[in-house]
Image: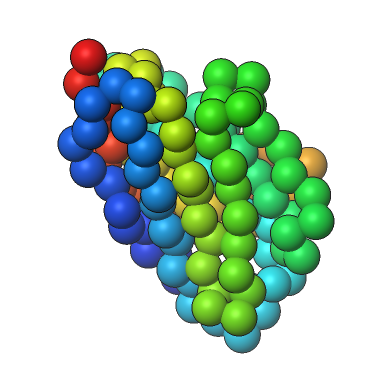
Length: 122
């Protein structure tokens, strides 16, 4: 079983940056594609970005393309989300998740972290 723990959230102003981290356990971390999702109060959870096991392929939601960057360090069993030019609408709980299929959709993610709060003030 893969255990995931997010960190790095906080309260920032619009235009600021944050870097989220997701620390994973397990001997086969590099065998999983990793995704970031977010959920704002009263809204459905939405896909943000995903990265393949090797880090060679990425896929971004249009809402964050050009502002957010996903990366991973498999030697550290960690995936990162660099968030720049943050907007109030980015405010949400951010979750990382693991899947064996980068293109399998949200339902394919079998393992989820507990989430970390990101709040962006205007």
